[in-house]
Image (tube, rainbow, N blue to C red; front, side, top):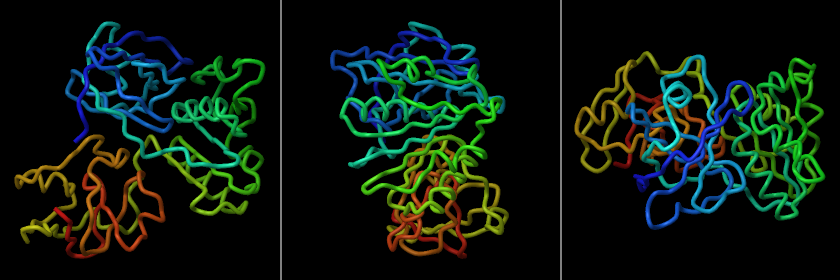
Length: 321
């Protein structure tokens, strides 16, 4: 489990017409842990919810910056932050975790959609400071909905990014093929946004000659259930350590079944976004439904399953617990 830290809300301000920036400062004698672009924290809200948010901005000492979009289909997290959170309020947070790190590269291509700009804004600042050539393309519905647009377009003498607005004819469908060119040497691509955007980025990049090891992504929404999966069927989960086994019906996750039977599971997002509950699999065929692992990891000889959302294509799955 992640180390728990106390932080105080130091400021709240609008970013575009639907997002809210939240500044958090440490309250203890020791400063908040340092972090690298791509990292996120768990925010433990007083309403009982735990939500994951990418850290962004220049990375000031003892200060974390996140940005939260108001979601129409909010499960409670974004609604609480927008409607109830106030300056001075104290919250428990996790130490930063990084499942989306920058890799050494000669050039970098960054592609963001919507609130997916948060980790990529931090990456752009770090790459600029290091002198690494990069391009950042930011896709939004309209300029008024963009977060950090002033910082991105007025950073010193040169803008950090190119903004593409759907209401100005710059939707991903029209502009991705232009933004993604053939890779040049040791170049890496990072994408963050809704799942549909990420799928379009991956398909376009592969068509332009990018290989899997060069493409890195992080989604802010869970993957839709795969067609033909075993979501409505029952399979068995077995503990490798004790041999205990229990049925997992279609209306429950593996994590829920394990916890009902007294097995501790390190849950956080419960949507397959954070990686907290990834567990090694000893035997069985996984129906992967998380967005944390790459396709290479999901097909590797040794695999991990997200207990909160993934299921099994086989009648039984044996996990290393």
